[in-house]
Amino acid sequence: MSRCLAERSIDHVLLERGEVAQSWRTERWDSLRLLTPNWQSRLPGFSYAGSDPDGYRTLPEIVAFISGYAKSISAPVRTHTTVTSVRSDGAGYLVRTDRGDWRCRGIVIASGACNIARIPRFAAHVPPSVAALTAQSYRNPGQVADGGVLVVGASSSGTQIAHELQRAGRQVTLAVGEHIRAPRMYRGKDLEWWMDAAGVLDERCDQVDDIARARRVPSLQLAGTPDRSTLDLNTLSDIGVRLVGRLAGITDDGKAQFAGSLRNMCALSDLKMGRLLDLIDEWARANGLDEQTEPPQRLPPTRVEETPPLGMDLASGEIKTIIWATGYRPDYSWLEVPVLDRKGLLRHDGGVVAAPGLYLMGGVFLRRRKSTLIDGAGDDARDLSAHLASYLDGHLARLTA
Ligand SMILES: Cc1cc2nc3c(=O)[nH]c(=O)nc-3n(C[C@H](O)[C@H](O)[C@H](O)COP(=O)(O)OP(=O)(O)OC[C@H]3O[C@@H](n4cnc5c(N)ncnc54)[C@H](O)[C@@H]3O)c2cc1C
Image 1 (cartoon, helix red, strand yellow):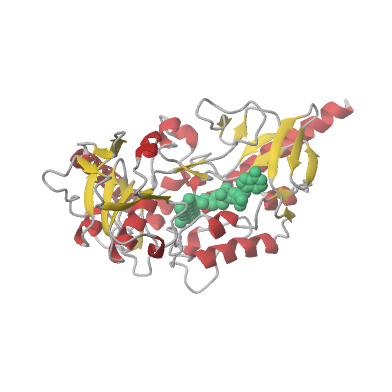
Image 2 (cartoon, protein in one colour):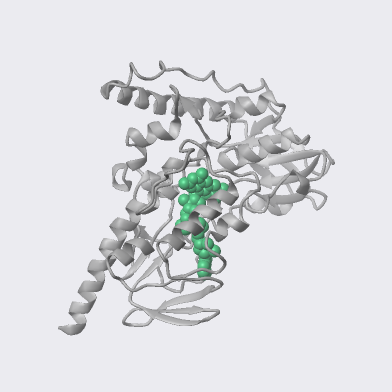
């Protein structure tokens, strides 16, 4: 957004409470790699020119990439400046920070969609003998006591953490709710390549039937490993992870209750994966790629044990650690403009917030499916900076009329 505003000569400043790329520096596990290939993180004026376009950036590489981009565009960043409140002040907004106040006509809220780990209310009933972590506070297996681990959530974060911990010698149980299975490689190419080429990631928010639902859909079960292997529930079963149904509740005395829907959840996920691959096959055929790529293939169905356990006594000592990989939510506790809905989410139309001169970036499916990804920021910033520019022009016209 800064690059797009600069192109339009719009005077602006970026307020950042930590360092550039703060969330990658402080809120991710050590072994994380981007699940999107290097070529895919395109930003305005930047595309990957290194020697490993199909690789997946490690955490230090992600930090270097984002910091390098900020430097290359001379982004006017004020680091170590926390925004403590934003309120309307007639002509625009008053922004209070721990380093002084700012007045401005427009604001782009780019404070992230994943500030706080989303944890169910019944987490309060986890017995004190069980250590609790989240996908945001988990760093590496060294932090996790020997013995059993219950990982809750089987999307991208949960499956990666479960895989790492089981391989490090813990006995992992994975509670599986709705999830989206996906092969890392398909017909010889990265799945992200297919989704990008076939336009799946460009699908706009006004093209889906139920955008509220689309914004709640969990992330693809993908991991960016050097060997490009698929990480799905079968991979996890193969190394000894035990699969149970969605964690539906925990009783006052610490008994975990798992939903009986594991088989259905897995069948549904297999079905959705099949639909995505059908769509890709259709696109490949229509675009003459059938001859140049490997033939279509399907993964075997997800294996589920005959009668997975429906309960577990968390106080029995079997489970030493529980890791909540149940998603994230944004934190707008500092926003004093009445634009939040009942769930504390911003009311917006493709990033245009329901208050003059206020915009949102970085939200899940904000304008397009790819808005969730680094790669989606460019198109969203181009659109929203155009909207902001015409808002500022109108504002100026009103002042001079
Ligand atoms: C575990 C995980 C893995 C992911 N993997 C991928 C991937 O492989 N590929 C991909 O493309 N995307 C991935 N994403 C999504 C990716 O994080 C987003 O696309 C991207 O980071 C969004 O950038 P952002 O600048 O909008 O938000 P953030 O990176 O969250 O940045 C928001 C910034 O705002 C600052 N901030 C917040 N509140 C305040 C305040 N009050 N005052 C001042 N500053 C504040 C924060 O310190 C932070 O630096 C992943 C996300 C997560 C959580």
